[in-house]
Each structure stands twice: as C-alpha cells, then as structure tokens.
Length: 281
Ligand code: NAP
Image 1: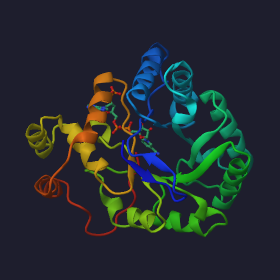
Image 2: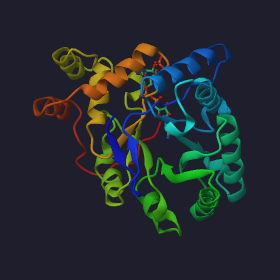
Image 3: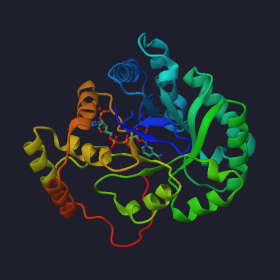
Image 4: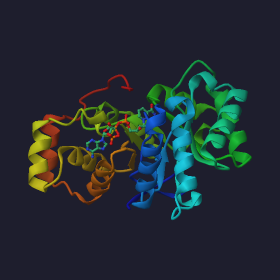
C-alpha cells in the first residue's frame, strides 16, 4: 500500500475505508462488521468514522470489527473519528472523544477531526484537542470541511499549526478545492483526506469513465477512484459494505492512468479556473 507522510513524518496509507451510513439499521449490523473485518484482512489499515454516523452506530461497527478480527491488531489500524461542531466546546470535545473511544472499544483514536466549522470559537476546540493529545486519548488532530478562510483562522489559533489533515469533498466532479484548499494544505504539508471519492456512486454512468474502464479492463468507479489515488498527498476513504466493492477499491491501487487518460478526464471534469465556495455533502 502506498503511503503519504503526516507533517511529523508518520506514514499513513492512501486508501482507507469510510463508514458513513453504517450502523444505521440493526439487521445490517453483522453484514457491516463482516465488511470492515474483510477490508482489514485484505490490507485496509485506515478507517474513517464519526460520532455523527448513526449517532455512534458506525463507531460500534468499527469497534466490533476490530475486536472480532483475529488477524488484525488494533495498533495496525489508523482510526479517524470526528466531533460534531455542536459538541465542539471544551467539555463537549472531551466528552465526545471519551464516548467515541468507548464505542470503538479502544484506548485512543489516531486522528480526531472537527467535522465542520460551527459556532464555537476555534481556539476552544483546539485547546480541548491539545488536552486530548497530551493525555494520549488522540494521537493527532485536524479539521474537516474547512475552506481557506477557516483554515487560515484555525492555523492562526494557538496550537492550530500542530494539525495534520483537512478532510474534504474531493473527486473528479468536485475539483474546486484544487484552486485553493489543496494548495494551502500542501503549504503546511498536511495530507488532504478526500471523502466521497466515488461521489456516492453517482460518477457511474459517465461516458469517459466507461471508455477508460473498457481500456483498463476495470469498472468506471475504479477509474474514478484510481484518479483520486493518483493525486499527490491525498488519502481517500471510499465506503463499501459489498465485498466485491471492497476488492474493486483495493484493485484500483493497481490502475495507472497515463497522460492521455488524464487529458480525457480533464476534458470531461475540468480543473477549476478560479475560486469557488467549498462544497460539502
Ligand atoms: P463514496 O465512498 O463516494 O461512495 C459510497 C457508495 O459507493 C456506497 O453506496 C458503496 O456501496 C458504493 N461503492 C463503493 N465502492 C464501490 C465500487 N467499487 N463500485 C460501485 N459502488 C461502490 O461516498 P461516502 O460514503 O459519502 O464517502 C466515503 C466516506 O467519507 C464516508 O463513508 C465517510 O467515512 C467520509 N465522509 C466524510 C464527510 C465529512 O463531512 N467529513 C462527508 C461524507 C463522507 P456499498 O456500501 O453497497 O458497497
């Protein structure tokens, strides 16, 4: 598995597993746990979740899978979770993190993010992140859905420079962040964590993706994922419960898009020619 470096030098895999929509429905629980176990056994070592997903239900799926998986040790998995902006005041962050740790059945979270900017002063959230980090409950912290204006505000706060990532919506049909957010992340050497890399499946049906899929002997969504995986300093976290999808997503790591493929993709999904508001899902 290829890796990217966090600002401190730790290497993190570029492909992980998302969990939004997991843990929502009781009858699906076992299937979802099995999918997370399968992904980990197939070499996925980074899992993205959040207190928001199914009100903690997705964290329970992840925790159950880690506990149940015989061949995977907790230390081998890089766990990302997120605090809701409504819980982002000092005590709220501490409490939310404790609850997430309990649901995950672990003693620490690897990377803890503010899910999106809200009304709580950023310094208060950062102060809580720093307390969590010094007590060993989280190893790193960062942000999600932060545009340049919010990133600048965050980075100006005391301790903001210790952040390691910004998780944002980024895929072929959502390239606006290439104009300003990604260059700013690069200036601080933080990886971008690209969420919804398949645009939740909506990229299926694109003509150019179908043509490239035929050329490479893959599916069109594998081409879409291979494109995200080929971007520098980007980690991505497609969500999949279907085991065939998990295999396909791992298979996308082996697809190499050439200059002509990228030219065709740029024609159908042009890079930005100016700034635009940050998109979110
Ligand atoms: P996504 O990963 O773009 O798409 C997931 C959907 O695509 C699921 O329906 C999945 O189906 C399907 N799929 C997965 N692999 C496939 C494949 N190879 N071929 C065909 N279909 C495939 O969308 P997402 O879940 O919105 O984003 C990924 C993760 O990013 C989330 O789960 C979450 O962890 C994170 N996220 C973060 C934020 C944020 O605000 N920070 C927002 C959105 C998402 P099956 O499940 O049936 O396999």
